[in-house]
Amino acid sequence: MKRNNWMALIATTILMFAVCLSASAKTKKIVERGMTKQEVIEIMGQPKLTSFDAYGDRWEFYKMNVLTGESKRIVVGFDLNGKVVAYNMSYVDDNVKQPAPPSHPSCGAGAGVIVGPEVPIGYCLDDASFSILYNKVKNASFDDNKFDLLQVASLGCYYSCAQTARIMRIFTFGDKQLKVLRMMAPHIVDPHNATDIYNVLTFDSEKSKAGEIIRNSR
Image 1 (tube, rainbow, N blue to C red):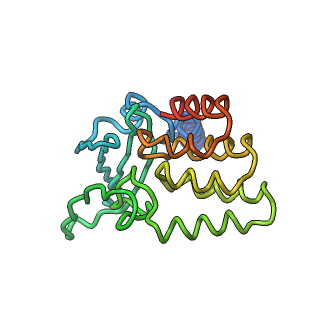
Image 2 (cartoon, one colour):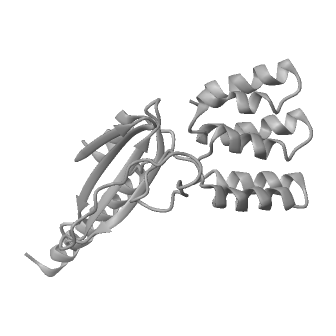
């Protein structure tokens, strides 16, 4: 084959490879908050291990890069409605025995913040961590700043109804208390204790709205 034909073939191959990479990048999906179990399966395949408790399901996946030999452990957590609420990835050292996943502690003393793949989803902040968050929100200069703090905290924290009620009481008016509830409701772990939240609100219409917010967040 002549040199010019070789060059043309190489150029065509490189172009096709680039097109494939571009198409792959456009179609590649990642697991995102709120996805269903079927959507996760379409992206990740069937889980290697599954478990469940009172807060939802936990799926574990193990993926290996055939080129580098690196192994990844991916843990996806679902709420009781089967929607994604947590995604954690860690590299696995095949020479180190992996610890068994811990069980859920109860809310209050002894519970903790969700900080990594070995920490389960679905339990509320411990008292010390919640106090830090509460004081930061309470001492923020403006309401917008308070809401910004809550929005950031709620990306990785879960709350009890009692904790949610305490944050709501920082605000005076019902509309802002309900705004707090909208932000925190998807992360409440004990909705059966919603009375704590209703007691914060003054009017029946506000309590009715609070119930709707809690139901729709499940």
